[in-house]
Length: 164
Image 1 (cartoon, one colour):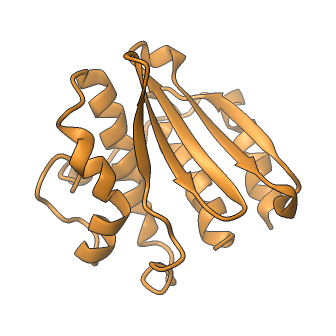
Image 2 (cartoon, rainbow, N blue to C red):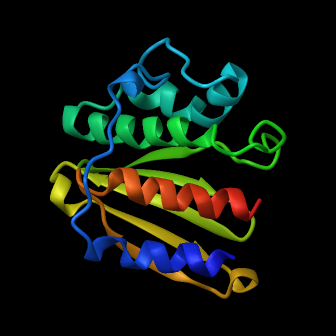
């Protein structure tokens, strides 16, 4: 089943994708004290490191992209009936500064990892999916921009939820 989602990921850049941003979800647990999904414990667990480091990030453009990635994750994770049972299987997101110009957000699992490199020059930002031999050693990446964040994150979340 992973292949159909991977095909969607690799084709995603070939489309002119609309932004599916819902104003209700502007109030996120990221950088704020709001909780928009049913399980605050889950949200805190998943985004703990990002929450701890978010206010230390100086670049507002990078902060907006990080927040949007997390909002899309929060908004879409409730679609999965097994998300609350999956807490132990889902690892928290990691965030690190790369040099002085970029931030790396990674979601690391046993057989694969998903990452977002957010650059001060937003048009130089990217995403990736890398897996080991158990998932056929795939290595897929692409550009990340304001127009495709929602779709990229949704597709990658599908991959995560189908492979935990």
